[in-house]
Image 1 (cartoon, one colour):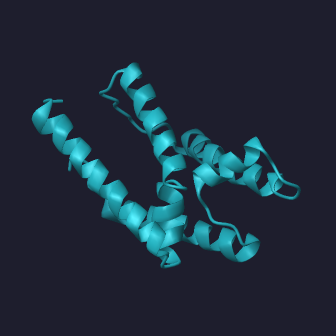
Image 2: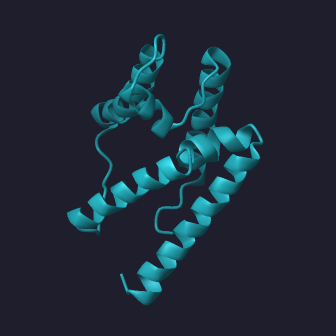
Image 3: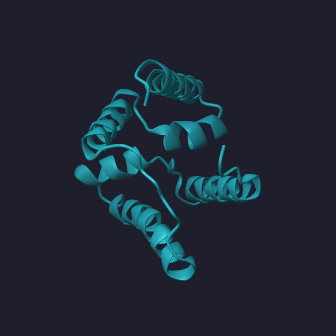
Length: 140
C-alpha cells in the first residue's frame, strides 16, 4: 500500500455513487460500462444520446483532470501482450457475467440485486486468486 489515500478514494467513490444515482433516477438506466458500450453496437431508438454522453464523460473527465492538474504518474509493469489478453478476458467475462464490475459492483449492489452481489463476490474471488497466482506461484 504505497499510495493509501482514503480521503480522495472516499470522495471518488461518493462521486461514482452519485453519478450512478443520477443516471438511475434521471434516466432509469443502470451505469454499467459494458452495457452502455454494448448498446451502441445495435442501438435502439432513444438509446444513443445518453450512452454517448456517458462514455464521453468517462473519457472527458480524465482528460479535463490532466489539463487542469497534470497527468498523474502511472507505472505499468506488464507487457503489451499481457495487457491485451487481460482486456480480452475482461470483455469475455463481462459478456459471460451479463455485466461488468461497474454495473454489478456499483449499481447492482446498490439495488440489492442477488445476481449482482453474487457476480461481484465472484469478481473479487477471481481477482484474489489471480493476484495470488501471479505473485506467489508464477513469481510476478
